[in-house]
Image (cartoon, rainbow, N blue to C red; front, side, top):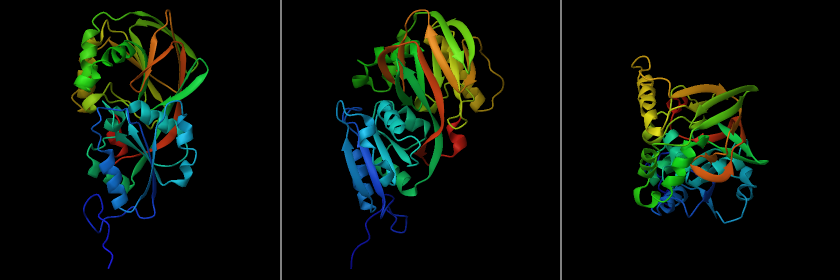
Length: 321
């Protein structure tokens, strides 16, 4: 008599992955090297899945890893936010549910999706197969196109990410906080925007274009951000430094908890948009989904409504700020 393969949850009566094909694309350089990915893959196979593993290689386009994606039941992207967003963009509109496996430093996409962090619980998410269709962003810089899931930005947030790189190995996600505290006198400039065809100028330290709306520990960046409404939230950073944005974080938390009207204003302005062009009086570095890039302003971004199905146990309302 053949024994029933154990399921990730340990419940023999739970749904299995028998007959399901899972593609796992992973970045071996992400995070601090303590990922539970091998255990996760073993659990998927124990639940009956046929698992194909593909390791990212230098100079191989992301699209090459998913050219046969429609022959798979599920896609798993294991790495940091940059890996997950690049893979999601390569698989956009293919209708194959994707798991954002948290193998990076901050894993903000996984946090926004309210995913667990241990291998067994993540395998359960795949086994249950619940997904939400969410928006993505597409960004164009100097004629090159790529995608992002969480946010793109120019200015102080990109400088913060640059300064955090040397600290990430020792301090993990706290490196971003430490870097923000250093930004006491960031460069200020005049930004030139085109938002859904309307021109706009403002003086400030940066522009963020948000699709997901939560930072570390699922704290809201600002209120009323939804990854499924077909629109970005464009955040104009008018404060003199990043520390002065902390009151706006307090306002966002208060709004999430229905604690009344905002107590602080003036440091941020938010605008909803489907397409955005950002330029600046002097070139500013760019970041998208936590990756600093050599390109600078100007850049264009547009929303891709319902571009990707993400596996998550969360409900749609849980992902909104």
